[in-house]
Amino acid sequence: MIVISFGTFDLMHIGHLNMLNRCKNYGDTLIVGVSSDSLNYEKKQRLPVFNEKNRMELIKNLKCVDEVFLEESLEKKREYIKKYNADVFIIGDDWKGKFDDLNDICTVIYLERTRDISTTSIIHNIKMYL
Ligand code: CTP
Image 1 (cartoon, protein in one colour):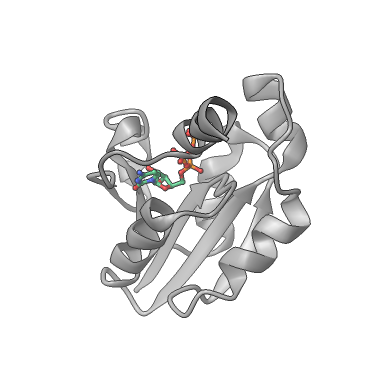
Image 2 (spheres, rainbow, N blue to C red; image 1 turned 120 degrees about the vertical axis):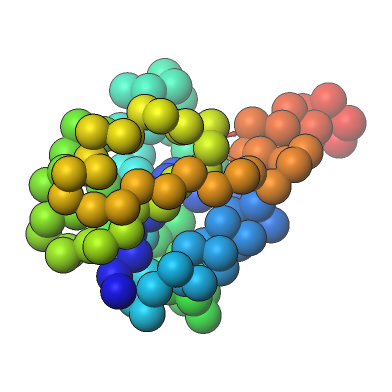
């Protein structure tokens, strides 16, 4: 089974690692789409702290990850799932229900997020307390 997942994975933290390790339990191969810098700029009007090359390199070198690619558009999930022949699409439950339409080409699973950590909260804490 081929599993595909997506995310920005900026300032890689334990929530990201937990998510990807759990994704791998659903199949033999885990492919991860890492959102591009420009995609993040469009979404949040700021660039990630770590650039796309370094974020891809960090994710690619995790034991549970077999392959990474650059996700260049949020609207292309269907295209990427087909391109990589993914059987299962997994993402955090902050997206619950948002990708149900993709159930016609693969199994869509929303996993519970790790509590009390996010890139946004890390940036906030650094700004507030350091
Ligand atoms: N994720 C998770 N648990 C967390 C944070 C993220 O399971 N505590 C998952 C997300 O649900 C997603 C993947 O990790 O499937 C990548 O998430 P991303 O949005 O890049 O990380 P966040 O820390 O949520 O970043 P931000 O605060 O910028 O939204």
